[in-house]
Image 1 (cartoon, rainbow, N blue to C red):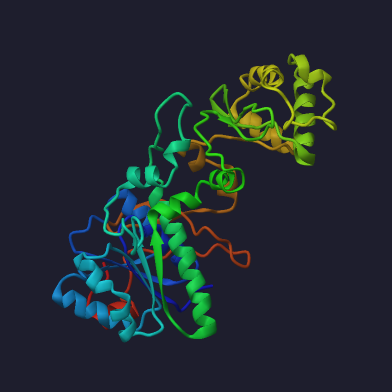
Image 2 (tube, one colour):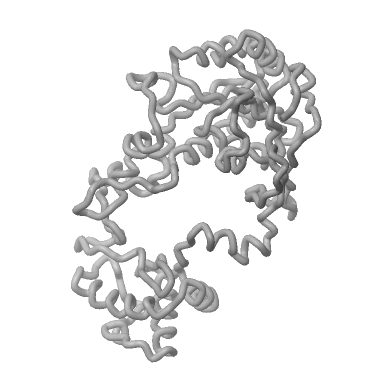
Length: 380
């Protein structure tokens, strides 16, 4: 899809995923780093696989000149900087546009390039808090929680990639480049899904609900989302609508087959059941029997049973579960790639299958690219 496009990825961790997604779509992505960059770091390798590494410090005088040469033949530059910093002078859009009027500059910063917080620094925990994600994570009577593995960087990188694709489409029509201003905080807000909608429509601010989901009942009842099972946790919600009715019917049939205690589940007419009208007492009585049943299953047993019965719900996967997932294996998602240190490791393959084929990852070390030739540098 992006074959023939040249991307200069000058980003830090906040933008690594953006370049990776564009590379997966066929772009030639050159990762520019200072010579002392640790390319053996697992995080660096995971997000910068499929890119061509290039030693180039764009803040040095010689590096800036060579970077400007690259800009003249590039389609996209991805950079992470804040206004007023030395990097801002290097990646200034007006300056780069004089070198290449069709250039697209994707500028990633914690709070955007304008506004009262434009010069603020922020780590992942600060962006997750400022974006509102931590206000929704944790127990109702507890403190805000942060997901253990940083999430804001990936949300930001994904939004940056989307912005770059929109800008490419605009350039295909108009011939003009543009500045894509990506805020890490705003990217986290977009990741919250339902929460902003609650405020926009009802002027209600969602709060932490732990393992439950709220806002599905006019009575104020909450529904459990995460359920303990024999070897971990499951995701299942008592839904309404046609899909929910089928799932609920199939769950009861499954429980009958195993002679599980149904309790109030045995008396429910699912064609008439409306979860939005149920009281908390009714929900608790129903879910007590469901919880007892789920506790007898392993994650694999639940997934296989739900799949056979065409039910909504899925197991909560650990990293080990993902690494051994038969669906990903069947789709040949994993690819073996040799890293800069010469060690071959298993990597996530390209996220998209295009025309029935998953594009192969490019391998380190790499031959000199046209970008490297233009810069006079060597590819790592």
